[in-house]
Amino acid sequence: MEVTAERIAAQFNGEIVGDPMTKVSSVNKIEYGKKGNICFLANPKYEQYLYTCKASVIILNRSFYKPDYKYEPTLILVDNAYSAVASLLDLLNSLKAAKRSGRSWRSSIAFSAKLGKGVYVGEFACIGKRSKVGAGSQIYPQVYIGANVEIGENVILYQGVKVYDGCKIGNNCILHANCVIGADGFGFAPTDEGHYKKIPQTGNVIIEDDVEIGANTTVDRATMGSTIVHKGAKVDNLVQIAHNVEIGEDTVMAAMCGVAGSTKVGKHCMFGGQTGLAGHLTVADNTTMAAQTGLTNNVRKPGQILLGSPAIDHKVYMKAYALFKNMPEFYSELTERLDAIEKEIHK
Image 1 (cartoon, rainbow, N blue to C red):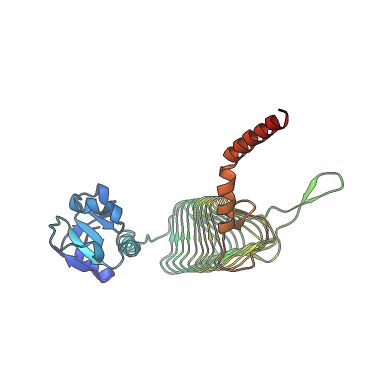
Image 2: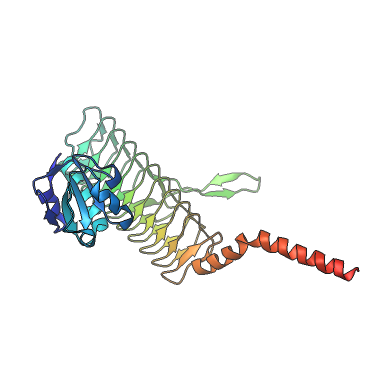
């Protein structure tokens, strides 16, 4: 799908320098731009490519524009090129990603299931008894939806998603390939004989509106009650969310994070890759944890930035790390001084 510079500029009130009818069909990095591409320049480090880029259109910060220079591409001048990229990608995606429609004859839909208007169901998808799928939702091939599941409107479940019995998914959610919603929580009680008896997981998972969950991520059902991913949360690939966890609104979690059972995460938190949270913790709103942070205690003060394992305040961590990385030199110097002192004593 091709789109003109004029339409793109209208998306974020940009000013056009050049031909407004220039057409583009794909996005590329400015250093690799070619005809038919649209690129953006937000970092001064890449300004050199503005004069050599072969792209058809470049989105450019107004502060970088030099009227006396000759530019081959059509320019779209904006206040913040970096933030404009999200709008651009959204526009291009909406133009090319038309919704699918219809229900494959090779799908399996229970007679008691209810599907809203415009729902797409792909090949070998399965929808269980008394489940409901809202209008406009897209159920891709090989998706499994158990019994008594509720799925809102305009939801996308990509290939291989599994939604176990009784779980609920809100409106405008996206679940990527092979993520599993509602598998049993990891609950086992030790017996007197040294074995483990499985604790029945009788709850469910609730995913609220506007949540996106990455490929191969798992969200376990609660032992009792609900595991909840609140509105607007964004969860990356390969994340484990355990039973009875709550993830706050608009919290983002990068790949390979793990949240142990019954931990409550606040709103607007940011977790880097491979962050781990122990069970039964409370994490305050606006908490940031860098990659590979390990949290073992509650975070009660909002807005903290934590590093390390066990996690500590980032300023304290950086001071400690500055000392730690120099320990070999300190140790060598200390040893030399002690040897010198010992020799002086034994003269």
